[in-house]
Length: 298
Image (cartoon, rainbow, N blue to C red; front, side, top):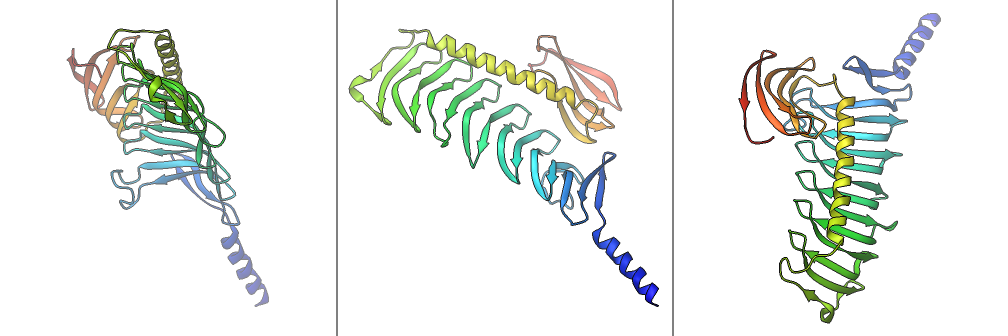
């Protein structure tokens, strides 16, 4: 009888302190150690309609745990598998580089998030991929130094200097064609009305606008290269169901129903090496059955 009691005690102890885990795409995930703490890679799947818009079992979020605390990059998704945002965690708190995306997968904003505020360089993009804001924050989370705004066509909209979160010194506004619209002087966030100058459309140009546009174009190219690298890294890992994949230019190249990483039913868009849209193939049962030519660029 004593031996039986010892056996039961050992069995219950093993059950209480053994590790638990699940499997996702053939890999062990959602693991807890003997102390019940989350460890390693975790995936959050839609179950029972908990996440509206997602299919049953579809991935909504993933990232790593260490001793029950989030670490590294955690990624959330829109329904369909497109990234919604990537946040860097330190000791269970968002503290590091952050990226947010539009629903088509294009980058929306990025920067360093630290202690519940932006610090350092911060960039916000138009939906077409062109730079919208090119700002800089100081260690206190206040805008500092040269700040720039851009039109959707890539031309400079506003450029000026900020100090401790307020305009300081000369601020220039531009028309959409690149000519100077106004010149304003600020002191500790207050405009000096007597120093304001206004110009007619196309009457005055300076060197700041083309230099700023060149900088913005360089930033856009850098983020396109990063997008292409991210896309390449995920080749062959497309989940089943309704999905949209992007090419190296950040444009959709396949959209529809996937199974085993293959497009079963939907559309496949073809582009030139320069990224110019050419035509669209109609896909059914995994085969091209027709095409659309000379449609508007995707």
